Length: 344
Image 1 (cartoon, rainbow, N blue to C red):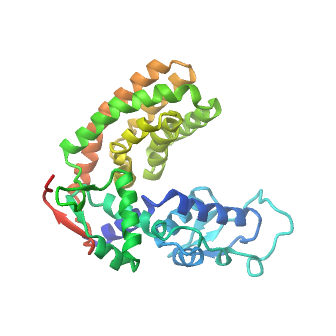
Image 2: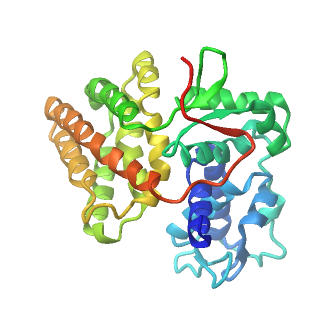
Image 3: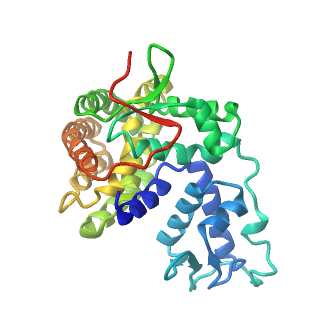
């Protein structure tokens, strides 16, 4: 793998798949300190420092800084790291210099379970590799690599199974299945059968202001379609397929959707590598059509539009995976063993 490809891959893998609870907590604390003036304009923030300050791994620290940059709260420095931006409407009274304030280094997310501190990084490493092959996961090596107990490693694997990213073969070994065209096709077929049903159940429960906010984000993205990035595409997918469907109210149905929606984890990685695969990302007008029908209370039409969107998305997902698979090979990791096939 070339040096530039390695750097891109490393930045991408760290930014994707981070546990939302973990990076969001760090983001919220830092954003609040910046808004209140506790972190003064010009204060330097680095990924390694944030990770150490909050007691988290570098992957969620990197994601938190990326979110802060996107929100305009920090700016990337030449070379490395970020600095706090100058805000015109900085909230808070009695601003203090960051040297004497309870800055980020005094806050640690120690209440987080041990598994959550490494989960995002493990998930992203696996998601970055299933475009290339099927991978077996060695629990003992996972624990050794992250210097955690086997219990913690087992907890991580359990969460990956819940998310649909890992399965067991007939010898009770954990594996992450390759995103072959056949496998992707099967997952998408489940999605277009199940998600429209969940949408019809969710539609009456979704607040109109939430739908309008989703529509506004889609409109903004379409207006900037030629400069759209993978993180934005990822967020818009989450809006429709996770947040909105979360109003379904049928827990059994939502559990059934978990396996095929493991594709969304892979999309974290795929979108960041192939954000410019199309001149105008096709999902934007398709999502807009679904949300507009919901705003017009045409629920059945919205459900039909969602099914149509998922059907055509299958081939686009396969195209993205093909672009990745023909690119650079991933770096080796001791807890992931490449496998051409699995016994099931």
